[in-house]
Image 1 (cartoon, rainbow, N blue to C red):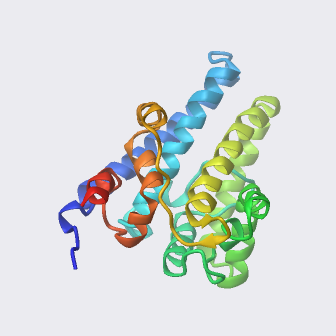
Image 2 (image 1 turned 120 degrees about the vertical axis):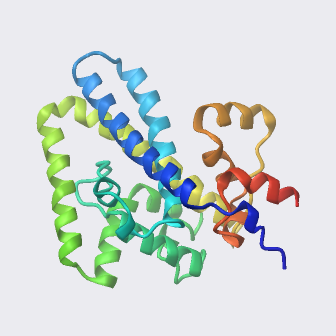
Length: 248
């Protein structure tokens, strides 16, 4: 059986994703500051933040397969992007993601609520993913001291930014949340549910869409989405090599 080990991501890739997560996080907060100070219009802020959040999400996904939380910096472990007042951190989402890989699209999949059941059910699951994820995780695994502290830190950040400028925060937060919902729906429902069947499916993109998407969102986002079926078969292959493996 071919392993494609020469395409596996390694320590250098892990460091790259870790640095990207920190930079994207700072840039997302920077856009909020610029918007509050009227240095950036609502349209530029929305466009830039939506791209940054999408790139942030894929970097996080790739890092799940390469680093345990104990080997990461505090910012990455906290995951301080305020998608919701109460939310999970790196350790918890990594546990959920591994459960997703072990029980992909089955009823035992911890992500089943935003994969299975058709378009509407999956979309509602994507809209409420943040709230359902924290409730389901604590119901299953309990509330540890570390998780309680991390939840408090994220809630404090959420509240502090809301108090800085309520109107600006609501607009900025809506951009964060809507971007997350769209990405979640694509990366879970569309790649794991097809015509009433569950599994893991590729999403071929025509050149007219693929090339602009590569320019805006980067190779990790585009290739991990297009070749998600290969990712599930070979989880250690770096996203940038998925098209090469698809040809092999």
